[in-house]
Image (cartoon, rainbow, N blue to C red; front, side):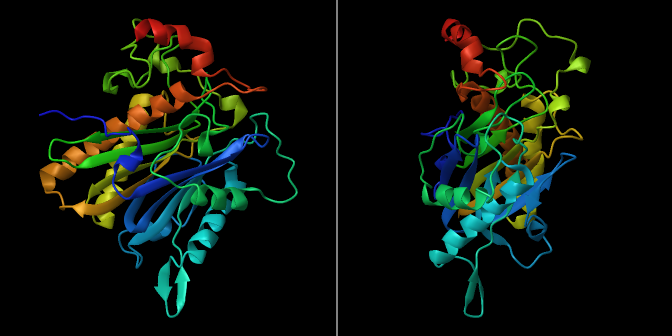
Length: 337
């Protein structure tokens, strides 16, 4: 038996999950929200040197709250942390949240990336991210766009536009694993000046061009970066329908970081805030030890694919500071496909 991509090849192939995007094209930034009909178990692991986060400490295994109502990925650097406030307001209006007496407090961890130097209009007088967060929640659906949308709207890599990506896989026993990622990396998702992706060995079908592995490789010790721009960070979510504890979710998030390393060169740098949340919805049985090991490996593979799909799907916009993969290499994809 073989694995296969889910029906949508999106994180929402994990039953019960929905994703909403909102963006302001003048601002050239946006927000992405992952939500479910009921609270879900979550963990987090940070490997970048410059993270920006909200409510991640409560995801530790020794904390009182074990489940969350939503997870938020946002542009806007520290300003973007306010997106989670908009999501929390919307969830409270829905009657969602952790019960404390007769009050409901929505639990909404979030992470941000830096996209303040990408050419957009950043001279706001009122922080726009709270409204963008609420709009993303209201747009949540099991079908959503990837590329230059949501938290990936203004994202860039060292050489090309970044974006929002997603991918999924269904294991032979029916367990589903999905990934969602906003790629704004210091490093590059493609090999040197070529169109091929570092993640090529993990591609399913032709989901990011079907070009296969690069024919030649530059010196891997001298990988290009956008260090001079100080505009970095890749943030993502990996999810499964297996029943995991909070500690197991944290281990899943940790393992999924290998997907960053497989798809981005370099990754986890001092100037990236690289972070991955893990979410478990739990309708399928709890995995045994061997299944937990497999889930971690699969999460890394799916995350690598999602990163490549983000860059592959980005589209060009007037005023871009970098070209999109499609603008620079579309002919290569046609030849490869």
